[in-house]
Image 1 (cartoon, helix red, strand yellow):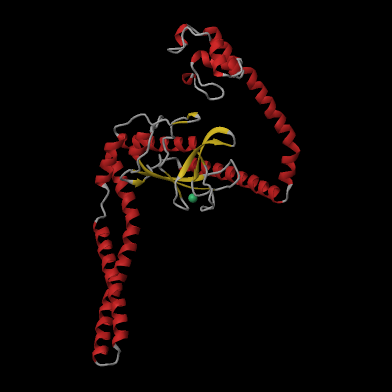
Image 2 (cartoon, rainbow, N blue to C red; image 1 turned 135 degrees about the vertical axis):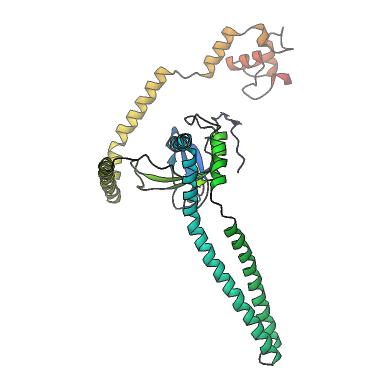
Length: 368
Ligand SMILES: [Zn+2]
């Protein structure tokens, strides 16, 4: 499991919020690279996960996903698995066994097929080695040719033997999933609050999260596949609550209609984008958008007046006490000290000398 830090990091430009709880667990479905959480999206403080290989164009798409939405999905899924275990843990073990069996069935089938292929080829190679040996003894195959062929067959055979041993142990090691289900139950039973997923919880309960590309690119109204792999048990979905078939059909029809409408709107958008109408619209409304933005900024400034450095100087002048003046500076006349430093006696410089701060020109008071 990768080691991750959940500490806040302090950099030269100030405090940053803690890492997103899912950082390090989210992977791209196409390139297999990690998705990183970006705190800002389009200038707004809104977390988005995006494929780390996209900026270098090593991945065709960013696989962007809203960080809050992803966290909510993971929390809800964990909660539903937890509830399923609470209701009937033997049913949970059975469901995990079935999921693992169906997943392993396919893997085992492919591995058995490859194992037979490897074993057949090894037998073939043994016959070929015998044949070239006889041909060489009988003088039908020159020594040089014999040595080349022999070493080729030997190295192929050694590689196949290695593969056979790996495949055999992989096939033997398949489990029915019971111990994995029990281990996962042990982990999840430690927690109850899944609404506030922490980094430690996410690391313990989740192996990885695979994010697929959005079904509709360039649209906010899109669906996106996300596979959550839990620790030990892998990809698992608790069975859905049984629903009345009529209700389910009505819900499905409703969902289909909504999706069809979104598709239609998205196709219209793509058409407008292709024929330049979208750009013309953007240009037409740019001044209105910018005026709105400026207005929002002005409104915000009224609510939160910006605190300038001169305000700070005034405030410190009003509130400064003897205790604020550093050791060794006490008793000196500030105007005299400023004169010695040789800086112009601006308010900022007087203030800096008075409280032992760095001077605006970076000269230290301690250097006096
Ligand atoms: Zn990718």
